Image (tube, rainbow, N blue to C red):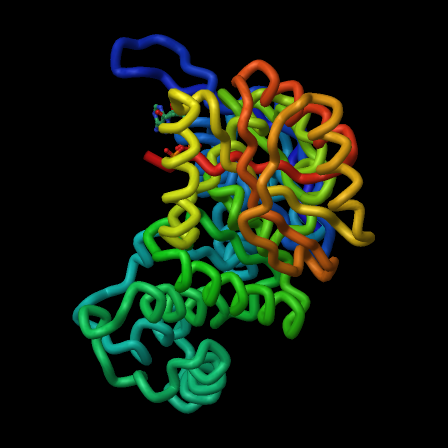
Length: 349
Ligand SMILES: Nc1ncnc2c1ncn2[C@@H]1O[C@H](COP(=O)(O)OP(=O)(O)OP(=O)(O)O)[C@@H](O)[C@H]1O
C-alpha cells in the first residue's frame, strides 16, 4: 500500500551545514495494516511520515502510495492524491472559532462540496467517533480525547485509504490514549484503512500496531512484528524504548514494596521492578523458578493480569527481582531468550 524506497532527507542548518534527517530509509506497508514507526525525539519520524503525503519532499527516494508514485506527480495530481491520505496530529489542529461539525466539514467545504452532501458525510462520521451529541460545541469546550476524535473524523471526510497519525495520543492521559487507540482499531477494522502510527511510546505500538520499525538518528535500526520486536529486541534503541515503561499505572502498594526492598538491600541497584509478558501457553512458572535457581535471586510476583496484544492472549506478571545489577542484567537477557517480553518499570523513586 505504501512503499518508501531509499528515502533520504538532508536539511541545511542555519550555519549552512548539511544535516541528514533521514538516511536511505525503505519501508513497505501492507494494505489494511496498522504500522508503527517508533523512535526517540529527533529520530526523524515526523520527517518520514510527512514524506508519505509529500508535505516533505525527500531529497532522494521514491514514495509510492496505492500504486501511484507521488514523487513523480505534478502539484495538481499531488493535491488530488493527498485527499486520499488523512492525517491526525498531536495538538489536534482544530479551529477554535468553528464548531465540532464545522471543523469536520471543513475539508469538504474547501473542496466545494454542497451543504446537503456535507451533512450526509459529516453526521455519520460524528456518530462513528461518538461525538454526535457534541456537534455544536466549540473545541475549547471539549476534553483532549474529544478534540482528537474531531481530528479523526475530519481526517476521514475524504474517504482516505491511508491515515497518518503523528503522535496523536502524546498529549492525552493513559486512559484517553487507550480509548483513542481502540477507536482507531475499530476504524481500521470497519473501513479497512491502512494506518501509520508515529510515536515515541512503546505502549502505543503494543496496543495497536501489527508491525513496527524502530528509528534512531534517521535510520531504521530494527523492524518486525510487534511481538517479535518486543520479545527479542536487538538494538540498544529498542531495548531502551522498552525499558522505559512508566510505573505510574501501578498501585502505590506495589511501589511501596519496591522502595522497602531497596532500603533493606541498600540501594536502587539492588531491587528491580519488571513486567514480564508471556504470549500464548503458560510458561510463566518454569521460567521464573529457573531464574531463581540459575541466578540465585529472589523473584516476588506482585501482580498478574491477562491482556490482549493484537488479538493474542498475553499473561503479564509484575515481579520484583532482588539482586545486584550485574546479575539482574544477565537474568533479563536469559528471560528474553526464553521468548518472554521484558519491560523495566522505570520511575519508582
Ligand atoms: N526544516 C528543518 N530544517 C532543519 N532541520 C530539521 C528540519 N526539520 C527537522 N529537522 C531536524 O531533523 C531531525 C529529525 O526531526 P523530526 O521532527 O523528523 O524527528 P522526530 O523523530 O519526529 O522527533 P520529534 O518527535 O521531536 O518531532 C531533528 O534533529 C530536527 O531538528
